[in-house]
Every structure is written in C-alpha cells, then in structure tokens.
Length: 168
Image (tube, rainbow, N blue to C red; front, top):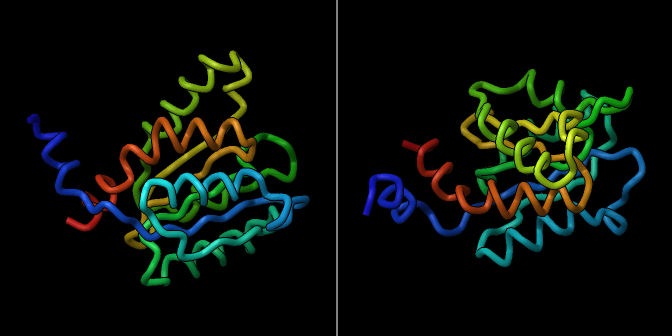
C-alpha cells in the first residue's frame, strides 16, 4: 500500500457537510443541484448538517458561510451556483475573499474534466476550493451535470482524506 492509500484508509468515513445553493431563482423545492449534492453525500455515508438556498449576494453568502464554519457539526461546505461570469455571479468573489488556503488543483481539475465533456465553454467556470476556519469549502457551478461531475470525480473520493489532513 502506498502512502496516499495509507492516508486515505485512516481518513474518517463520515463527514458532516453543509450544502449551500447560491441562486436568485431556485427554492429548496426546485434546487435540483442542491438535492443531488445531499443525495450523493448521504449515499456515501456522510451527513448533511445544514442546507440553505441563499440569494446571489456577497454579504448573504459570506454570512451563511461564516455561520456554517461555527457549526461544530460541519467539517466541509459544498456550494453550487454563482460561479459563472454573469453580472449577478458573485460566489467566486465571496468565497475567494474568505479563503485562508486555496486548493488550486480543484478548479484546474474541474475545468479539465469539464473541457473533456463540454469543450471550450469550460473556461467560463470559476469553480474553486480551499479552507476557511478549519473547514474545507468547495464551490461548484449550479448545473446538475457540473455538480455530479465535481462530486463524483473530485470531492467524494477525497472528502475524508481532506478532513483528515486539515485536522492534523
């Protein structure tokens, strides 16, 4: 077994997560991407400690992120929506301003995987990840397809390992 596999085998198997959907139009009932994130987390044995749909407004987003970082049941925050370049898309700026450490590889890998599926339009996503107040945070585009890609290919395979490394 290599060192990476050893690290992963010692990682926690169940992580407490907050899910935040950034949208001016979605509600909890119509939030397909937020529901997908929650379902995928639960299927892998993780818990959803918090779920919110928040308007695409920097102060509201940052307040919800701050509230989730003081919730002892939350170790990871997964966001969807607001990562594009439209005037109202402010998730990237809201999250980036709060990051203590950036996981640059997440956005790079997400765009690479997206490019393989949707071509050059992948350059428009500003998916990002990093750490805030001892929590790992991921920010994904709002489409159901993008959420599935990010969750299945990048987030879920490393979730426990990330939390383990952050708490060392």
